[in-house]
Length: 295
Image 1: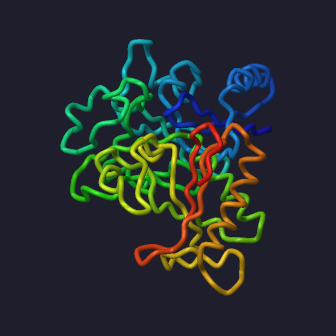
Image 2: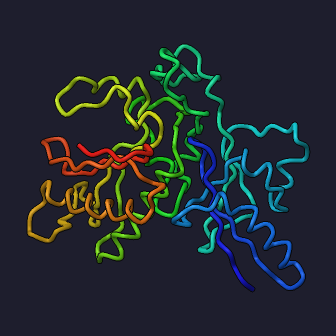
């Protein structure tokens, strides 16, 4: 039996996917055809754990047929269990987004999202939709190392469901950074200090010293502030092994992320190393905006 691992991001804000196609005897030819059809969707890390419904609806894989009995069938927003699994046995889920149009006056259900700049100007792109986050799916794996909870905005703790925007390319870049950490002999336990930020939450830090950009990449699910924390103490590790934990460790991590970008130019974006403050340790901003940015 030959196993082929397939990873498919689709669209700017859709979630990528991981599939396993087994090639056995006479079925091998058709499986090869399926593999070829998926080539445009192949990712870099092979570690994502979600299939976007809009991609799955055209793949017509047997494991997904029950979800698409007809072209007119609409899936309920959220995660759906499938018969697919990653090579390590982790479950792979089908995801249907809540459409962006469901947000009214900055609110979706009881969850306050705010207003994206593009809603006023019409110039910037808007998210395609939102991932619903419930008490039961908040710990679901969206990739090998990361869970949905890692990207939830840090406010409205008692409001459920919450909603998240998350780009597959960001997950891919973070997973590749984790792989690079392992190759460098460091822990790959990357902690997301800040993932998706609703426009409402992001606005609270705009204009403050060391604050947030008005059109922050975090609002589009394409950015994360991360640090390496092997011992779980909530602070960056001594990555450069000089006996201290400071901005130099964030710069060490940034240099590693630079190498990841160099090897995977389609994941190019913003990188910046931040010094520690009284509120947090050093960290690195990573994004996939599509153009190189440093500050």
